[in-house]
Length: 110
Image (tube, rainbow, N blue to C red; front, side):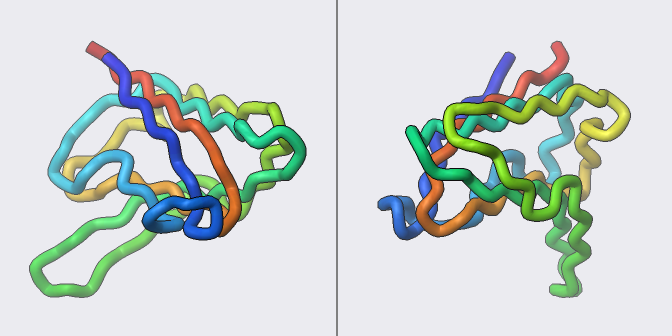
C-alpha cells in the first residue's frame, strides 16, 4: 500500500508550504519515503518532521530532515524502518520551499 503526493509551494501554485503526509493517530509502519524534485532546473528544499497535536495545545516537533536540498530531476530515498516507524501520537509532515514542486511516495508495510 502506498501514498502519493504532488506537492507545490505557495509560489508554485500550491495551497501551503507544509503538507500533512500522515495524520496524528494514524499509526503506520513505513518502509520507505521517496522525495523527488520534479522541477527541470531548480533545487528543491525539504524539511521532513513529525509533530503531535495534544489537547493541551503545546505541540512537540521532531525533525527527520532539516532543510535538505534536492537537485533538479533527482530523488532522495529514505529506507530505515526503525527511523520511519510512525508513532501513534504524531503526524508526519513535509515542508517545502515556496517555489518548489516535488513528488512524495510513501511505501507502507502490509
